[in-house]
Length: 305
Image 1 (cartoon, one colour):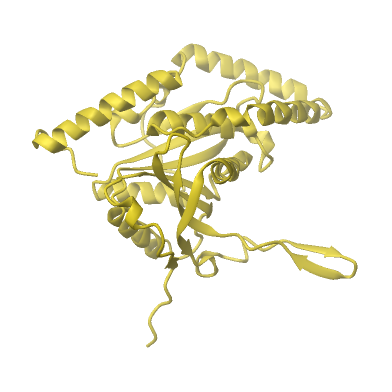
Image 2: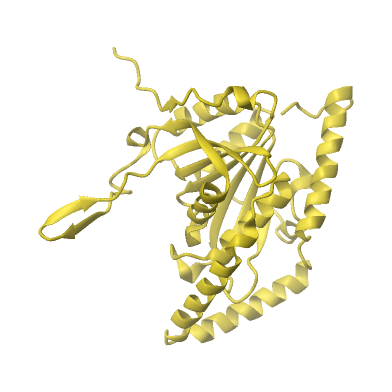
């Protein structure tokens, strides 16, 4: 029986530069949790403004269910042409302050999840990743006229924003690949965190740059990186104007947005304001310092990341 084909190819360059760095890994996977093109927008921003090199290229032909994710073709002058094939790539990146981090950018795997998760767990351990951050855009009943709501979740209570206290109890949800990887990593004692941005449901897969900007700000604050999110501000303003025009041209659009605004304002009154980016960054630095102290002294049962 022939061996299973490998899921990825390694680029031999640049691995030695990561020795001892213990980088953060950011997951930007386009799929079930990608409302508003959030992961695509954030990934494009990082690739444009951060020095980067590919470490690993996954074989999407093995990981794609083409019946559900068919390629798009252009038809012009009597013939079909195709766009460049999508890629799922693990990049080593350098932020504006010279800090090294990792980013996995591309379509989420649709097939062979257990093999793909096992491969990533092995890579994460081998690269000494100290924190894996999964970023999602969730379609929610929120208006585009208010600042995007951002929540976090993590086995570490220090990394969970307070508004989740408004949600009590338990529920079962259909997993995205990133969330599934989070769960497996947590079982293995690896530190994980999820960043969930609430995207107006009526935008569907249309761009919502404000959500991408909010995601970048939260990644920056929680991971101690300098990702230049301000460079998206003008694009967010222009995108907001486009959405305003589309809503105004829809028969029930303004009324629906007005109702969503009332619900949003009531919720913010209930849970209070989210911590600022500076407040979150300061708290995260305190948490990391305490974690490192326990690891170095052997005090407590905090696992090594």
